[in-house]
Picture 1 (cartoon, helix red, strand yellow):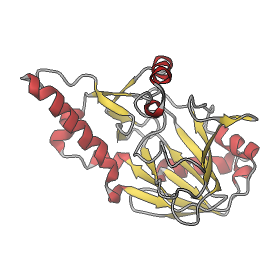
Picture 2 (cartoon, one colour):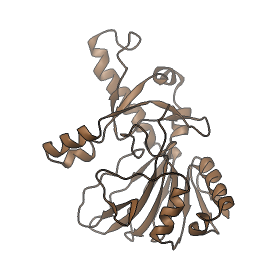
Picture 3 (tube, one colour):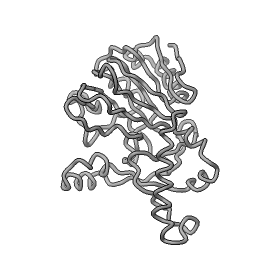
Length: 280
C-alpha cells in the first residue's frame, strides 16, 4: 500500500491495494483506517469492485445507514444511489457534513463513481479541525459552549410540497449538536456547523445578549461566519472523478461540497454511509 499526501491540510491518494481484498484482510483494513484518521479523506483510483464488495468494505467501519430522501439499491440496503442525469437541481453543492440533521450523524462514507462527466462534477473536502484551530481566540471563547440546530426540512424539504415537507420535519425533527465537537478517536476539536445548520440553540445568554437587537443579527452573523470557514482554500482538497474511483472520508472531521457544474451530462455515484455516534 502506497500513500501519497495531496495537500498540506487534507487528503491522500492510496494505491497498490484492492478494497475488495481490504474487506477480507483485517491487517490491511487497519492500515487504511489509520491513514483515514491521519489524512481525513482517502482517494483510490480504478477500483473495479462490485456493489457487494463496496458494501462489505464499508461495513468494516460499522453499521450502514439509509437515507429518507435519496433511494438505496434494493439489493444492498444502505447503498444510496446519487444519480444525476435529467435534473439540474442538486442537494450536494453546499459545504456540509453528512447527516448533521441526525442525532448521531454519519461516522464516514465510502463513495464510488459509476459514471461521471468528462469535465466537471468535482468534489471538495475540507479539514474542519484546521478550520477550528485557526479561529481567532475571542471567537473560540464565544463558541466554546454554543450549540446549534440542524435540519433536513429546510434543505431536502425545500423542493417538496408543504405537506411533504411537514411530514419530513415530523419524522426527522431538528437535531442539536455542539458547535465545537470532540473527535471520539483523536480527541481533536472540530468546527461542527455547516449547510444543515439553522441557528444557535443557546445564544441568548447575558454574555451575548444585552438588548433584543443583539440576538438575531449577532447570532446569524456569527453562524454565517463559522459556516463560511469551510470555503477557505487552504483547508481543502479537490478531486476530479474517473469511473471506478472510490473515496473514503471521516465525516466527523470534514465537510464536503459536490460541484454542480456538469448538467446536462450524467453523474452517477453510490455511497455507503456509516452510522456515527452522538457528538459531544
